[in-house]
Image 1 (tube, rainbow, N blue to C red):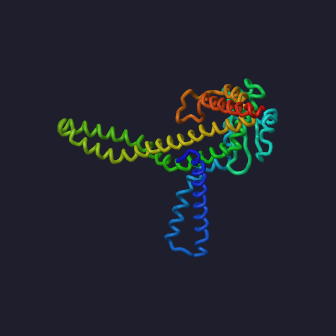
Image 2: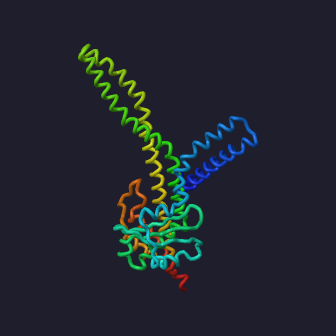
Image 3: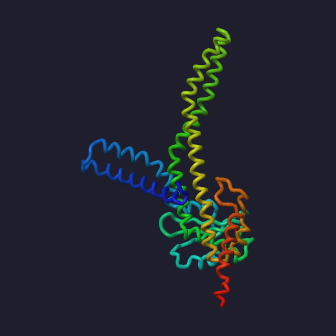
Length: 317
């Protein structure tokens, strides 16, 4: 799946499942009054309703209160001075943006948008505020505003909600399997060891080893499905995280490009150099690309803008 279409796929899947859940609930509510379908339809509607309940409940926090949920985790504080810096960048956007800071030793900033509506928040770390100049803060603000205008922060909420939706039953199965294995394995080991010792002392070593293949076979019948559930969830979890981080990294470049049109690429580059760099080589579970790659693209953009701004000899004459 193309990484650009992933948020759309996540959103459409969640909306479809919500529509199916609501439709099934309405059908079951109306059926006693208007008996239009047979019992098979009622059973199908009940199955849909029950199977989608937990996944939708898991996804709901990322859709209903994405901004409040995120800001509470960092003890966000509104900041009037920062709001004044951001306000000109949002002119005509239609967004209502809450701007503030949070305490952190890492120079960073982030933006979050509501999934529905035009509310958003932009937060700057105290470390960034203390080290950046006014122009650099405006450049970072432009980058975060670009995330809001591009819909990146909203799309991330859709993707995270979809991840929770998709992982609900794998996580439930993995937790049950893990706890079952934790209780069951010691019992198998102790019971098998006692049985082996009893047979060894009563009938001899060769006879005692005869029961081991059967024990191992029965243990595999029970243990392999449980272990598969645990490993299967880890695979699903890693895959969904990998897709989310890949989308996040790609959108950083798009936000940089838009921010460079709001401020000069040179100022944006100087601001980016203040941020904590994830690495020279990016890991698939990093949310941001290396700063060196971002700066390299901005320098190329600055060169292109400079070449367009310089008139040719024909134009000068």
